[in-house]
Image 1: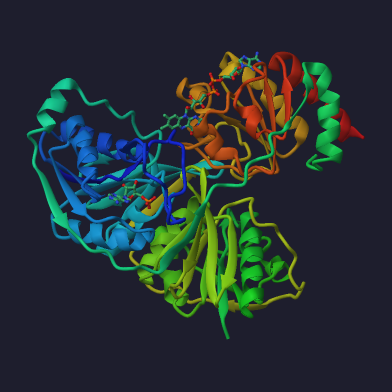
Image 2: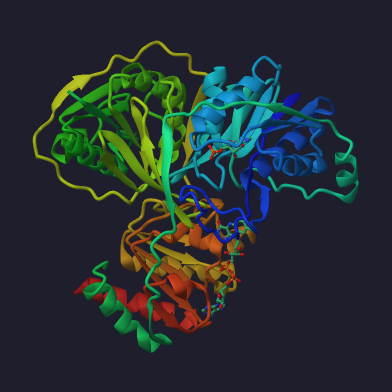
Length: 249
Length: 323
Ligand SMILES: Cc1cc2nc3c(=O)[nH]c(=O)nc-3n(C[C@H](O)[C@H](O)[C@H](O)COP(=O)(O)OP(=O)(O)OC[C@H]3O[C@@H](n4cnc5c(N)ncnc54)[C@H](O)[C@@H]3O)c2cc1C
Ligand SMILES: Nc1ncnc2c1ncn2[C@@H]1O[C@H](COP(=O)(O)O)[C@@H](O)[C@H]1O
C-alpha cells in the first residue's frame, strides 16, 4: 500500500483571532499553529493501514510556507515515512490548492490518498474532493468509518438523519471526519526518528484563482445576554421572553 | 439572459426542506442580477414537493431522472450537473452532507473555485459576493467570486425561505449523460432512534458534562419533545465519553448548527463548542456556574441546577403549547 496524506498547518483551535493590517487575513503574531485536526485522522488512518498491510509507504504532503516543515515533522513523528513540502503561501481559492496538490500526487502510484474533510481555518471543505476530480479517482468524503480490503474500500459518512454506506475500488481518495479513528500521539522515539526522515521541498506557484478575499472581520459581538434569574423559578419568565420578546416559540 | 441554477435535494422521493432555502437564496441573487432561476431535481421518479418549487421562486424546474438517482450518486449527480452547469451565471447548493460533497466536484469539473458554507450572498459590480464564517466562526470572510459560474453552497437554516412570485414554474428535463459510477452508495442506515438532525432542526437542545450520566439525557429528550420539532445535540465531552452518538456533536469537530433556538444545558461554552452554534438566532443557557463562558454568548440565561430547571422548563413549554 502506498498512501499519501495531505496535511495543512492551521492556527490552534483555541487561538484568539486578530485581523491583520491588510484587513483580509489574520495577524499571526503569537498564534500557535498545529496540524489540522481532521488531517490527524487521515494520518492515523494511513499509518494504521500500512501497519496492517505490513508493507508499503506513507507520504505526507503539505502546501504552505517553510513554517509547515514543523507540521510535517509532527506527522513523521507519528509514523509517516517521508514528507513533501510544496512551498507556497497558499490561497483562499481551494481549487488552486487542489491543482497544485494534484500535480504533486499524479502518476506516483498511490493506492489511497487521504485528506481531512476540511481545514479548520478556511472551512473550505473541498480540496480533497477537488483533487479526486482532477485525478479522476473515486472519492468518498467526510468518512467516519473506513475499511480497506482486497483492493477496495467501504466507508460510512454521516448524513442528515442517517449514515450513508459507500464502496469503491482503489486507488481512491478519502477525506476523514471525526469518528474514523483516534489519532495517536507522537512517541519520544517517533520524535527522534522523525528528525532523520526525508523531507523534500519543492516550490510551487498557485494561480490567482476565481475567489478573492475582500475583507476579514470579527463577527458582530453577541449581545451579552441577560440572566433571567436563578433556579427553576426563573423558568416562567424565560418562557415568556422566548415567546414575546424573541418570538421563537 | 443570466440564469442561476439551484440544486435541490430529495430523500426517499420527498424534497428536503433545505431545497427551499436554496431556491430562496438563488431567487434573491437572481433578483439582484436580473436573472432567472432554474431548479434541478435529481431522482429516480416523481418527487413530492417538486411541484411547489415554482411557487418558491424557480422559473423553471428541471427533472433529471436516472434509475440510480433514488440515493445520492456522487459521480452521476456531478456528471449531470456539470453537463449543464457551464451555461449558468451561478450554481447554488446547500452546504448539507450532499452539497458539501457535490459542489466541489462540480466546481472542479467546471474548472472554477467554490465558496462553501456561505451565510450571505450579494452582488457587487456585477460579481457575486459572499460572506462565510472562518476560523471556527471567530472571523467572517467576505469574498468575491470571479468564476463563471460562481459556485456556492449555503449554510442550512441561514437563508430565509421566501415565497417567490407564486408562479407554477415551467417544467423541463435534463438528459443524464453516460457516467462511470466509481463510488456506489449501498444504502442509508437509519439512526437507532429516528431523530431530527441537529443541522436541520429549528430548535436544538444540547447537553454537556453537566448532565452527569448518559441516562439523564432523557431530560433533554423530554424537553425536545415538548418543543415539537427539536433535536438533541451534545458537547464533545459527552460524545467522547460515549454518552451520545458522533452525529449529535455540536462544535468545531462536530456539526455546525444555526437553529432559531439553541438551548445549552450543562455546557460550559468552550470556544470549540461555540464554533458550532454561535450563529444560532437565539441562545439560551442553563448552567449552575454563573461565570460559565456560555453566558457570554447566550441571549437568555438561567443560573441554576439543570436537574431542577429543565423539568420545569419542559412543563412550562408543554403548558404553552397546549394553549
Ligand atoms: C481540537 C479540539 C476540537 C474540539 N471540538 C469540540 C466540538 O466540536 N464540540 C465541543 O463541544 N467541544 C469540542 N472540544 C472540547 C471543548 O474544548 C470542551 O472540552 C468541551 O466542549 C466541554 O464540554 P462540556 O461543556 O460538556 O463540559 P465541561 O466543560 O466540563 O462543562 C460542564 C458544564 O456543566 C455545568 N454543570 C455541571 N453540573 C451542572 C448542573 N447540575 N446544573 C447545571 N450546570 C451544571 C458546569 O458548570 C460546566 O459549565 C474540542 C477541543 C479541541 C482541543
Ligand atoms: N495547504 C494545504 N496543504 C496540504 N493539504 C491541504 C492544504 N489545504 C487543504 N489541504 C487538505 O485538504 C483538506 C480540506 O481542506 P479545505 O478544503 O481547505 O477545507 C485538509 O483537511 C487537508 O487534508
